[in-house]
Length: 104
Image (cartoon, rainbow, N blue to C red; front, side, top):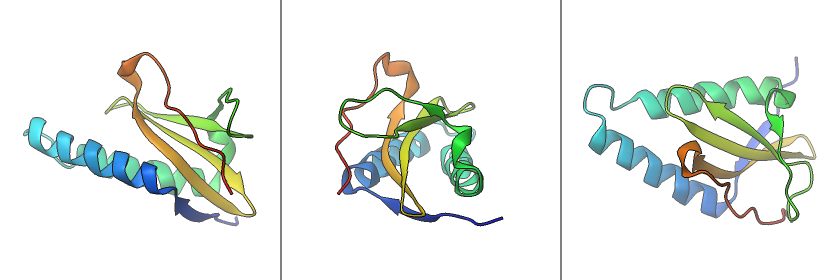
């Protein structure tokens, strides 16, 4: 099975770092849970990118999202030229999705 390359848009890296820092500070019984679940999900999506649900976006064609069930975050992404591009890391509890920028 071919695994997709992986790339993050800069804003998604900021969101990922903020979510990880918040989780480590506020979830003392499982400080590594967010990182572990996120890494596992990326490995899964790199091999099976259609696992994420299609996500309607006016700005990002082919957008999909994948729910991290234990930590309640979504990974928003699209596939471009054999690369899984992470466009956002967003808390699912917010009740609305992020603003997704078009990919170059």
